[in-house]
Image (cartoon, rainbow, N blue to C red; front, top):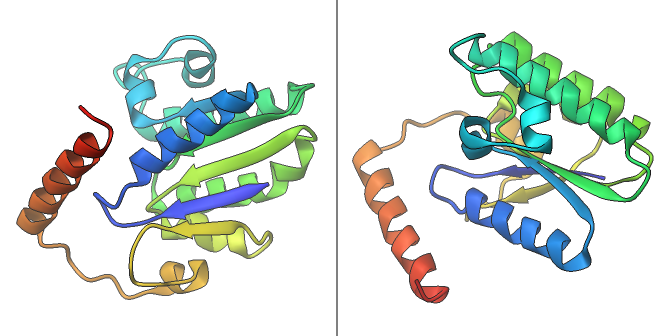
Length: 181
C-alpha cells in the first residue's frame, strides 16, 4: 500500500508523479495528489486538504494539516483510491518530519480502500520513522542503487548547484522532446 519515491533533484520524481497520475486516470480510479504546485494553485479535494495559505499560517503547519486531512479523507473513502503526497514535509523541522513518518506508519491500515499511498520525499527523518514500523516499497530514481535503509543512513555530499541546474534543464528538454512538445 505504501511506496516511497526518492532521488536527487532533477532525477525525474515529478515526471514519475505525472505517470502515476495518468495510470490511475486510465483505470478510472480516484487519485488525489498534493504537490507544491497544487499547494500554490489548487482547488477541489486538494484545496480541502490544504486549507489556508502560507500567508496565514506557517508552511510547516500547513504541511501537517494537509497530511492529517489526507489521512482523514482516505479513511472516509468507500471505493479504491490512491494518494500522492509530493514532499509532505515542506517547511517542517526534523522532529516534525519524524512525526509525519510515524503518523503515516500508524494510519496506513486505517484506510481500508487504499490502493496506494505514494510519498515523494527528500526527508530522511520521515523515512527513518516509516521503515521502523512498516516496510514500504521504494522507487529510487538514481543510478546509485541504494536501498531505502541505505538512503536514510547515507552520508550527504554537497550538490554542485550549477551542474544540477544544467542537468535539470537538459533532462527537461529531453523529456519534452520525447513527448513531442
